[in-house]
Length: 297
Image 1 (cartoon, rainbow, N blue to C red):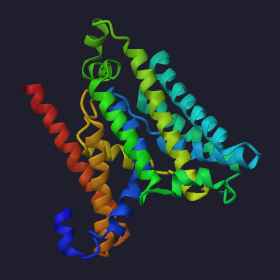
Image 2: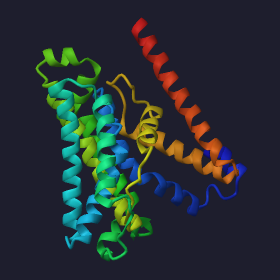
Image 3: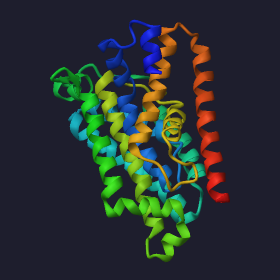
């Protein structure tokens, strides 16, 4: 697609466009990392968009109350992790599915965002320069946002491939009963992965706050769909047990390239979602057919 677009538009391979594409998905990519690990363990989180917004609102609210932005960010990330703990508790203690539990918290957390702000966007233009740097600054010409994203991707991908603790994620997602008989505390694995997913959503929310210098209570609506689409397109199975962080990042990059290409080709924004939906449909269909083939084998 990149090769084709380089011929279709002279602006596609320019540094400004490449930089814009990287910036467009780098922060969202932090959420993708958490969602990838959660899908591998066999779960799903529909609340990530709301949690990202919640982290922004909490950070902004505390800062406007006089709290240091770094302390406010730490509190926001911790609060986001607590939301993950609540979802994980509903799954492992009560027995609800990730889908139902996260759907409920998607609505609850969004309501909290609106309640805390009274539905009014918070302007945070007085944020100190050192805090804004993580969202707006650059190191050697490379935006800090991209460096943060790259660091999280590299660490998580290596850990998922080599760390014995995170290998349990694959065992639990592949066959939970077998993993349980092998001595793996599958409930604990699912719980902490859910917490990790929400915590990373909180990190993304903090970075978004630094980047935009504002906190809008309606931010992140529909983000969960884009994140899940990227992970599935990147090769993760909705049934659990398979997937990689790098694959999910490539899935997100594909969606970004598609969006950039459609804009450069002057395609109506109304058709962009249709095309993205078709790409997701193809990816899920391929995933389903591969699972059916494996089952028959």
